[in-house]
Image (tube, rainbow, N blue to C red; front, side):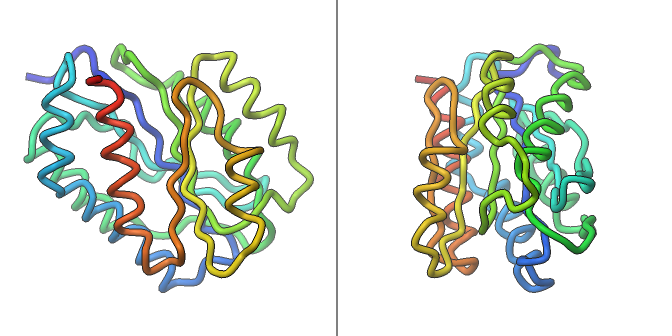
Amino acid sequence: MQASAVDLALILAVDVSSSIDAGDYRLQMDGIAGALRDHEIHQAIAAGPFGAIALSLVQWSTNASQATTLDWSVIGSAAQAEGAATAVEKITRHWVPGGTGMAAAIRFCAQHFHSLSWQATHHVIDISGDGEDSEGGDVAGARANAVAANITINGLPIISGSTTIEDYYARRVIAGSNCFYVPATNIMAFHEAIRKKLLREIELIAA
């Protein structure tokens, strides 16, 4: 039976801008798919009050480029998680060359919650990337509007030698109730970082 309410509505907002090459993109998609197949994550979902979450995936690059590449999918069983993982593995990259439009991505994701068909106890945007907004976007304003709508923004900065990106996510990106970030030292560490972050997000709703 399809759930009518879920514990968490989660948008995975994945940076696919010009700084992410084809190999980096594939590592991100494979990392997300791998996390969705993780037994510990399945157990955490089952431990929630409703025993289900709703998941969507948004790819973003410039101010003009955001795409919902996995629409809202309920995950309340290992079979549903496998279906979502398989779908993620098949997603093609949607982007245009240019800068990093993080503020526009946050605004897009906040609006995307309006298309959710299920009642959700928590709403979270899970934004990952390897750079700061470089397109003149108002990140502070976008995240303030999201928080005002009871949306939490968590982060996964991909460090890759940067001396500023982790601090940028900590001070200027994450916001809202129980917000946090989990850094990946480089793109090769993305798989484990996304697994840890998903697990923490799901466990918070069952606490």
